[in-house]
Every structure is written in C-alpha cells, then in structure tokens.
Image (cartoon, rainbow, N blue to C red; front, side, top):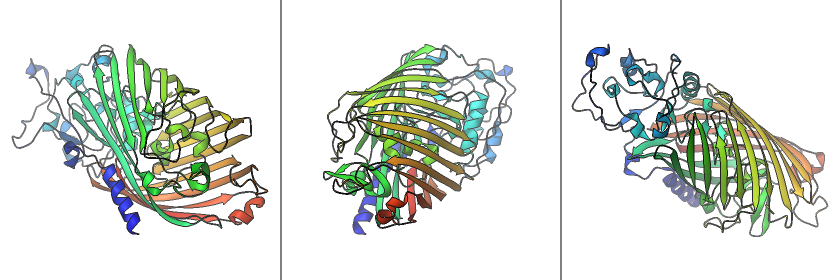
Length: 551
C-alpha cells in the first residue's frame, strides 16, 4: 500500500504544470495584446463599458463556449464554466487563422468581427473591449469557420469546465481538425485538445497530463488482482518563425517505469519482453521519454502546408492516433489488447516524417526505428532509421477523420528475431456533440511468419459535463499466448474477443484540473481450447481515479 501511495504521489506531481503561470488556478488564460484606440469611434454602434481599475486585463480566464454576438457581448456575464452553452452558428465568415503567416491569405475586418466565432467564452463586457487588437501577436489559430466552430463547441458543451479553451487550435490546423498523437488527425468535432494553455511572449504553450490510480481484478486462472498508477505529462510550444514558417516543440514523459519492467495485468495482452521473458496477459509500462520531437510547417497558401516532423523519440505515420490521445478512449483505464496491432509505434527511438497537408487531406511518409523499446524504460535508446511507413488521412468535415497506412518494420519484436513485419491499418473516426468513436482494422504480416488481423471499435459519450459512458470491443488473432516452446499450444493462433464497458463521473477541481472516478467490466469470448488456461467465462472489473490537466 505504501508503495502504491508513493507511485500515485509521484505521478500526480508529474502531471501538474510546474511553471508559475500554471499555478493561479483560474482556468486557461490567454494574455491579450495592447489595444490602440479606434480612429473613428462614430462608426460603431457598440457602447463600450469602461474597464474597472481593479480588474486585470493582462490575463483573462476562458472557460466553456458561450452565445455571443457583436451586439450582445454582455450575455457573457450570465454564463459560468459550470453551465457551458454551445455557441450559435454565426453568419459565414472567412477562415481567420490568427498566426501571422495566414494573415496574408485571410485579412480580418476587425470592425465586423463576430466574437462568437473567436472563442472568447467566459469573458465579461470589459474583457471584450478590444475592437482593433492585433491578434497576430497571439501566434496561434482560432476557429472562425461557423460549421467547424459549432461542431467543436458542441463537444465542449458536454466536457468538464475548464477542460479546453473554446475556439483554439494548436499548430496550423486552424480548427479544421483536432491534433492527435504524432502527426495524426482527429475530427474537429472532438473539440480542441484538452489541457492548460497560456501565452509566453511569442510562444503559445499547452500542458496536458494525467495520473491514473487503478485497481483491477482480471478474471480466470491467469488473471490477478492488482493496483497500479499510470501517468503522462505533455508540453507543447508553438510559434511562428516569420510569415511562412511555424514551429511546434513537444515533450511527453511518464513515470510508469516505477511500476517495474513487467507493467500491469491485462488479460490477453501480449508484446515486448521483461527480464528477457515475453509479456503475456500483461501490459508493459511506457518509457520515461514518450516523445521528444519538433514539427516545422511551411505555408504554401490557401491553407496548404509542407511539414517536417521528427526527433530522437516520436511517432511515425502509421495507424490512427495512439489510444491515450483519442477521445474515444479518454476514460479507458486499460490499454487495448490490440495495442501492438495499431499504435505500438507511438514510442519510437528515431523518427523523421515529411508530408503535405491541406484542411481536408494529408499525405505523409516516415523513416523510423522498427524495433520496439526495450525493458530499460528510463533512458533514450540509440535512434535508427531502418523502417518506413506511408499514411493518407481524409478529414472531409468536422465530424470525420479517415486514415489508411502501411509500413515495413525491421524486426519489431525481440521475441521474433529475424522476422520483419508488414503492417497495414485503416480507421474511421466520427465525433459529434460529445460522442467520439473509433473503428479500426489492422493486419500484421510477419516476414516470414503468420498473418494476424485485429479489429477495434470504441466510443466515449459525454452525456453531461459530469457524466460519461464508454466502451470498447476488440477482436484479435494472437499467437503469443503460450511463449513456452515446450507447451503444445506454443505458436498456435487463437482469435479472442474482449468487450468492456464503463462509466466515469467527472469532477472539476480548479481551472483545467479535474478528477474522473469510475469503473469498467470486461468479458471475453475465446476458443474452448483456451478454457484450461483462462477459465470458461473469465470476467474482469476495474475501478479508477483519473487526475488530469484537461480532463
């Protein structure tokens, strides 16, 4: 028990933003630049209220989306973060990305700007007094297209208070899609990336992180009862480099190596080694360094960009967004048993990705290290570029993200020496009004060796800002369940299905910090040949407490 408490305290400390600006607890803030006086005040019908001397205008809290127009900014006074209201779709206006490079393509008429499309949710009248502010100093993008903004706001209306800043889009996405792990895309209707956001000079900073306290009882003879802590802390920094270039720096870390090399119990999960033994019915811990990478965009105009992503630790263009970054898996306490079919490459030591992107399409190719991380989780392994992948993603509307990808991995698994792997994946993600879903297929073709396929369907539905339900169904063909060469079932392929459903109660604490309490129940379908090892009808249950920045 003492060890579990120490693990929980360490993970929670890692999750919290450490900068002084993150400690004020007023929610996400965005400093606004100084505002020159309007040259001709007689041309506007809006009556501007004076700003109270005791109220600071340097940093104003922003919470859930509100209904607001140029004629009625006062309505913002009557809403709070605990009662978010989706923004009304405003009349069509041009896309208005707020970074300097996009300003050439979309000049802004500040006198006619619809502030409802700008995401100034939670501000009172005095906070809205910036009719001619130079927004280009913000160095980030705001969603101005009514359809995309409305879809994003509909998700935030059901999210916990302070989970994300309305109308904000990191990087150069301009709100046409939500940024996933690596260079992957999620539907814009999942809402903006959740976390703490602030301005630091020319940089827009965002922090996200969590600590899960988990208690599970995995059923059957191979299952066991266990308590463990999962954790992750992520920091992103964005800024423009002149009119054409935009850079994003990322770091993501975890204290999960404190679990020990064997990780935690997860029935029917396989992959990687610990103490030179294959992990079976267990999920390995993540590494201390989950990502250490940068992305450089070059704007071609009309929303198109060329980009280069990479670093000593990163994620290649293969598969859908990693499970811990998908809205459809936001409150799932256990990793998918199909993890090594879809997103095992999300921690790769050595990645370079180049691509071409528009709001609706993205084509990219990666060179990366094919071997999965070893059991020594505290260090950075020597980068290598011995594998490759290609991926195409289509985001035709705010509600959909469709990807197909293929890669050739050089000896990815230590327990299959001399075997390369061809991996093909396809996924469809749909989101709308608090619902986020993922449907995916993957085929692992060992060269030489078996062809092993997997299917996944998962969803999270945020019923209200307090209540969420979620579920996941997986079906996988696995030949690693009996690693002992003397076992008669060694290398035999079995198709297993796992179905898990759960509930989460979300409790905002302060600003973007919140707590989710919940639990899941999982059942399995399997061949009768596995009854002796797993029992006839194993059932697992899990209870969790998730402390998160951007719940």
